Amino acid sequence: MKIEEILKKSGSTEFLYYKSGGIIFSSGDAPINHFYLNNGDIKLISKQGYIKQLIFGNRHCGEGIADFMIFTDDVYPLTAVALSDCEIFKIAIVDYLLLMDEHPEISAEMLRSMSKILYHNVQLSDIYFIQDSAEKLISFMNYLKRNETDQRLYSFQIYLTRKEIASLVRLRVETVIRTIKKLEKQKLLKIINRKIFY
Image 1 (cartoon, rainbow, N blue to C red):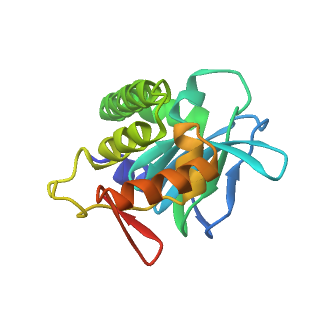
Image 2 (spheres, helix red, strand yellow):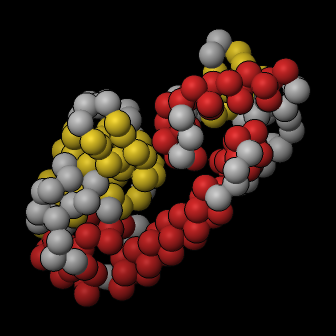
């Protein structure tokens, strides 16, 4: 049985709706509940003031949000923000742990998910060490495009803003903009209506 089906049948699950930009939880909040994304996309960020923001990753439909917090007594180190309108399952961590005991497939899926996230974080960390900004952006776009069936040039749209790309690859926004223009002149990517196609 799928996790979504188990959560829907559980009497202790709430269904929450968030508009784009809505805060699911904030850094410093105590993790009392587990959140599972049924529809939509969210980003996990670390904020410093109103301007500086570091993106730690995105979560998509069918994924838990900050699964690792189920097993710690610490507060959230990140803020979860809806990138689109979202439907989220909310369940008390205590009840979720009981469901995990009753349905071992939940534990297996969570381990797969956390392993995948850890793997991707290691891959991204390799990109951080690249010094050349063009090489860094090409490596990052290859990383984003890696699972696409269509690998032709310009076939993949990057759904991230320049600011989000800068945050993810640890470059300044100005450097990202300048490098993207340079890569476009080299015909390694294409800009159509301010969207990047790689």
